[in-house]
Image 1: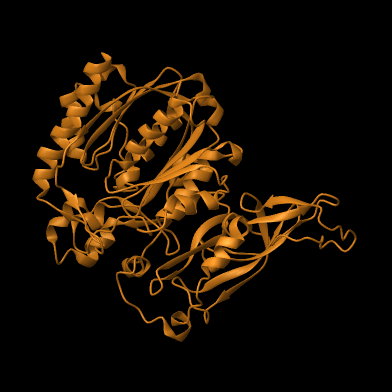
Image 2 (image 1 turned 60 degrees about the vertical axis):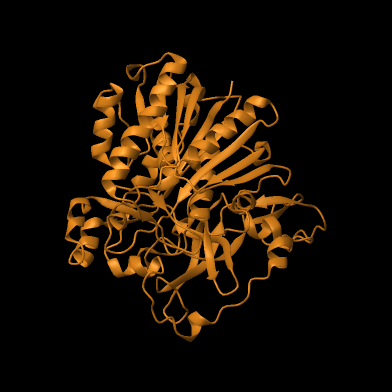
Length: 486
């Protein structure tokens, strides 16, 4: 049987209170007062669709050997690259084999469920054993719009396989309609949307039920059979109407993350499914309904294997770790919506050598060093001769990954002279328990929160953006290990 074998999620640390947005832009569009409630998740200045997809994917994989993954599908409407496969960058960061299947799924908010169905069908065919499906989005709402309030950032990931299935796919039904609601052409940063009542009444309220009722008829099931119904719709009023139209009860409806994350586009139904799996019990039936140029309806049944993956951070674990972004202008700068003076240091940018990125392969992308098989000393970057003065063995190394290790800060600097989009620039030495020392940038923290001995984990981030040459460069940074809700 094919189905989900693991799950993972990611929600950025920063949250922006929607009242701050309204306080800054409500003078321009007073009607946005109706959506100026709760908060939205905001990607840090060094995060994007790729970095969040990697974070969710790593959470999903846990201790599962990377060599067992046969493919990766990455889904988004906000890919950094239009002409370079984003899934290949994610695969390199997670150190997947080179002989895997990879694909980008885009152009629709239901691309996540479409990829999930494709992965299940590929596994059912017997051609592959496991495919990682990640969905991630960082959609931008134009300042002064409803979308600015409601759009949020986040990612979800599901591993699809045929062994150790935690939620078996029992059936699906899809509807495809060229319904014009949200649209964006090449070169545009903001989506256009047709009249909101049109989207609500003719889109969500009519297309989603077509898929749901089609699945119900095809598999002889009804709404009351499902423990949770996941509807990838960001509008609470529409969900209430759909609840009644489907003959379901309010308690069956999975929270759409609208009040504390926001509308995460292609990632929304996947993130909601991950949140549902976190609380699901064996025997529970789950109905997933996505939306975007039609609708996908997926019917899952949870198995006893669900208890095996309870240690994932998932959505709830990331929601518990938050930092309020109390400055609307800072959000604008992070999203490159407000031009600021970066100075000479900010303008000076070294060229990213594509040949170095390619030849460095997993040394750079996956933070892979080496460990001496004679004395056990880890070292980065890879070495032929062991750096341990008491050893010095030659060509007796094995791959050793620092990306999943927790280290401690040995020394650090807060630099107000070096350019940073979130000054001061923070960097320092990190020592690892098994050995090895790395000099890394530090992110997702404040300078006053750092101290010698602070435990840190590795996180895949955007190192810099060179738009003049059409290049985004990625590397690993250190971020403090969260011990409590901040």
